[in-house]
Length: 399
Ligand code: GLY
Image (cartoon, rainbow, N blue to C red; front, side):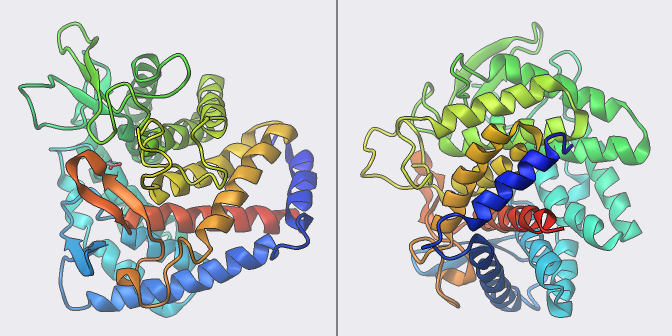
């Protein structure tokens, strides 16, 4: 994993000691994590006694929430796990366990692809941090449920069952995120079928979701007889041929962890190409917090999507482990800029405000006029993950 170890150390040292006029990066991260713990405790306390309820957003001055069926149900438990990892507060641990439990029934979900998000962010982090044996059964059952959505004739996991009149077999770029659960299940159970499905899904996505410039479509629907795409379009982006920002980040994150897990150089190259496409994008703002779609016609007079920035930052920090020192510096510089910006009052809420979410200004689905310029659980999740990853990198460097 750390084939560029010593170069990376020098580079991290330079990163940490640069910009003398700015607050030290480690201080920014520590303060952001302390704030995240306080804010998340307020969120956790809000829903005590409301069995099965999970936070979703804060829209027009009101809390919105869901049960475990919503694709985002695992993110708030995941926020609590990262906050616990950093602060080791017994109170946070208690809440992390109880909110994680609220998602358990999703291990039986077979009618959509979001099982990976739901279970790996909640139970997956819980297992990583506590070793709780009972979490393994939940994750393995969930992986088996997810794998029922794999059709060998198509070679991919089907994302959605709705809109059958439009899509025979829709696969969205977001689905790259669900493979991590399958890869865990392969390691735990020894069943290589989980790896084979993941590899096939990743390879076909690489072949059919991406354009020559490494931007990606949101939805690709496959013909179930030929196994080839019959439609390529968007659902949450500006246009079929545009680059929906969160989708680009999902792809980057997905191929980065696939390389971590499988060490297939093709996945590393794919992640590097996506990262380089995004970093050099002419409509990427200077602070690297993307607009909700890179091709939104009203840039710069439109919304940023903080969730896309958080996912990208977390992925870039991981990607920097696998590349040469020059590229690592480039990726970490971008991630640092994103984190410094997100940690500023422009994007971080005040304690007790913003419905007790950490970050403001994400976009769920602009064309559907749903959750536009609001806080979202997945922005908070990938933010605390990015903070944790960067903090670990800085501290590894000091050993
Ligand atoms: N997976 C749905 C989204 O990113 O909005």
